Image 1: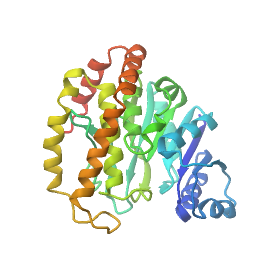
Image 2: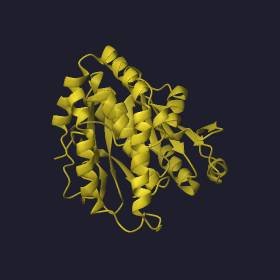
Image 3: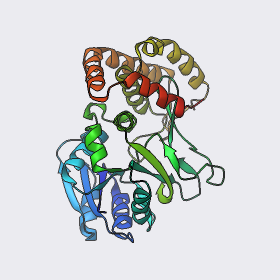
Length: 322
């Protein structure tokens, strides 16, 4: 069973080289592809200087995460394909364990890795949702001794590393490049589920991740993209009655979230209420402007996948956040 791994790089510095090094050192061979998303640093040159075997796919413009994933899938042809961040380190037996898990579960479309920090803090086991598609990574922030790390069925893969059969990706279709950043993998994995492909979490497939280098935690930029794309996904996927409840649920959520927002973002910059409110307003405005296009996509999904409303509500009940 062959594996192609596609890495999305944007100003990854030396982290990119170390990520590739951990992949070419696997006990089971993998082919490595690197999509450089118009980086302005020397990350690609550092990788070339290392002499590590990989295929570099350049992009003249920053395609965002979803667009870069699509371009990588166009270049990869293995039975098992992987899309991942550049700031990861793969355990030497990761690929071997991914293949073994696919073999144990021939009906699985994807295998989710155990993504964690080297300290033992878990990044993600699976993904859980509220009724408005607000998503949270299962077991995020827990010590591995406290997390449920049994091999089990989960909603989908954590976006930092997604391992899937080529046939599942074809059935789901390409990611929406217009999402640019955030929620693209969640929307994509709803389509995987709608197409009948399940995901199995494999605790032996370990990947180490110290959180995102590309975006800053609590930043207005992250808030804008995550909210806009969540709202766009709601219009595509939720029953009409649930869509009408979105503004009311948003008010409750924003008031609750406001209590836990720190005084500064992850890069040390001061957070103002004006910038946060502006990011939220912009997200809702852009989602509203795109309403006709999203309704068209909604119709297309129902033609392609059938009883979308019932299937999505079943998924939300199965992977309920609260």
